Image 1 (cartoon, rainbow, N blue to C red):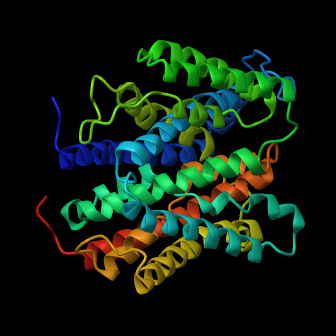
Image 2 (image 1 turned 180 degrees about the horizontal axis):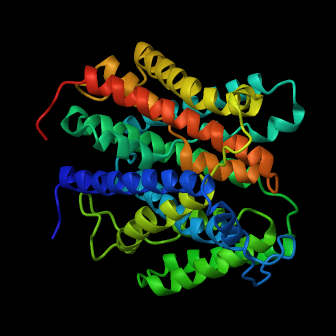
Amino acid sequence: MTRPAPSTLRAFLASEAAGGVVLIVAAALAVILANSPAANAYDSLLRLKTGPVIAPAMGAMTVHMWIDDGAMALFFLLVGLEIKRALIDGQLARPDRRRLPIVAAVAGMAAPAAIYLAVTRHDPALRAGWAIPAATDIAFAVGVMALLGPRVSPQLKLFLTTVAIADDMGAVAIIAVAYSHGIDLGALAAAAGVLAIMAAMNRRGIATLAPYLIAAALLWLLVLRSGVHATVAGVLAAVFVPIRRSPGAPDAAGSPLHRLEHALGPWVAFVVVPVFGLANAGVSFAGFGVEVLARPLVIGIAAGLFVGKQFGMLAVVAVAERIGIARRPSGVRWVEMYGVTLLAGIGFTMSLFIGGLAFPGDPARMAAIRIGVLAGSILSALAGYGVLRFAAPARRM
């Protein structure tokens, strides 16, 4: 059976919204644990060495490394599948539909990075964190929109989703280029060989998922050893998973990509991302006073998310419409567009992830990063909710 496109979109957004609510709960629980008598046990569990030594430069794997470098590879595999589907068989397949989300995503990444660099310009050691406020957390943002019910139109939800997909493309490129160090050329060459095998399987029309999943696991291992961040393997593997065009049918039995995306979706939304949030959002406020909010690292991240996202995206949408290269979604007013650009400032998952890459093994800076990300994301969520709640009319779905 096939479903019409509106039902497909509604099902996708419903799953993202539910996953966003679970992520919010996981993040809140992490903060509670980090400030409770169980804080030491929580921290010890994350630092527990489980082994084995996969990459000599990293040492024995810990629980936290398995989450960030292992489980999150599944998240990036799903991101890659969604990007490929959107470009070939979805809302970004037509050039006229790509323009506004792509230019909005680019501006929504550039403006926060510029604000961060301006705020932290007096401390060169902080420059590595320029990409922290550049990303949007689609699950969290759609979770907030779900609380608004019919006040948020499907056109607004689709716009935010497509912006987040374009945003993910940029984030993956940033991780691959800016946060990969000490490259092992031998492992990288072997990884390229695995990709060549996957490409050959694709060309031969192999539609069984098992060979692609085995190759993806081997690719992850080699990329991890190479020094390129292992999560990039997820996106690279997704490129070679075959897709058969079937508009409006994400569960199409004949499309391997759709099958894998449908199978991975619930696990990523309800297990991988919440566990990541639980492992990375726990910031202890012990010993912290109000003065922590004045630290350049905290201000740069929070201001980048809350100020940079909204003004960067809104300005470029206005310019694009003014010069005629793209238009707002049909029926969407400027005040509603402003509310959505505020929600795009919810960085959370990807911002925390990039923060860990920018300042590895630096607990003090990671604590400041968590505070900045939480502050910027919470401000964006509350402001976006408020604007859409009181400005957008109720609609029948």
